[in-house]
Image 1 (spheres, rainbow, N blue to C red):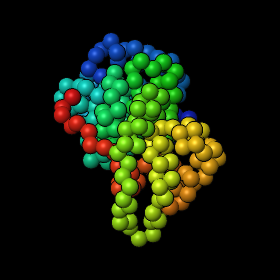
Image 2 (image 1 turned 90 degrees about the vertical axis):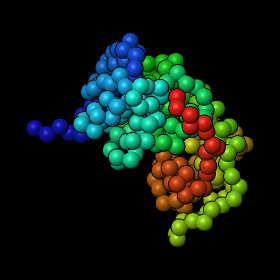
Image 3 (image 1 turned 120 degrees about the vertical axis):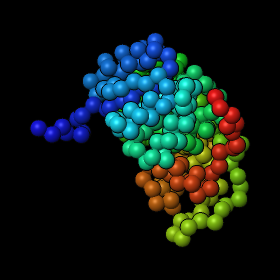
Image 4 (image 1 turned 180 degrees about the horizontal axis):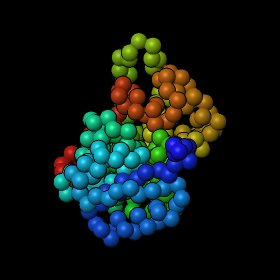
Amino acid sequence: MAIDPRTAPIRVLLADDHAVVRKGIRDFLLEEPDIDVVAEAADGLTAQALLRELAPEVAILDVRMPGATGIEVVQWLRAERLPVRALMLTAFDDEPIAALALQAGAYGYMLKTADAEEIVDAVRTVAAGNSALDPLIAQKLALHLLKGAGTVSPALPFGIEPLTERERAVLVLAAAGLTNRAIGLQLDISDRTAQGHLANIYAKLQVASRTEAVTKALHLGLIDLPPVDTTPL
């Protein structure tokens, strides 16, 4: 009998070079009936081999690993076009590193100080194709993105309408993981107005979700992330 993909557990690969950390994360993930840890890796190269072989829905990656860093694994996933969504789980709370991970294609960035429940929720969120950011990182990243948001609109492909300055501001904050209410507080508008701006953004960019909107806006140059240090971690 075929397994119904709607009820099948979320298949997760866990990559971290510390065995004790992997065990702790694995133990609380396996307590969840809808999550299955199908493989573990202690370095980035092993993670790549297992990701190619198993293609799980979610890869939980540490930033600093031997062989290949977590960010390099994310870049490799994008280059290989594997249907795996990456969730960074790390001790690094620096917004430039988080920005680099998101630029590379990570769907989420959580800190190891997060509660088990928060990490479990992040896995589910990423598996569903949405972004998951640690609240501390979201706050730092919002300021980081705002500092790097340019004011010149680039040339756009035929059929794509330019975003207004307010829409770009809303999209930058959405990229940082802020809720509609948080966006409203940041820009001194109502959450309904923020939701309306997002709906306009979706229509202009011809997308259906925040993740798609942010990805397409970065690709088109509608929003920019500031330069980050690419020195090996």
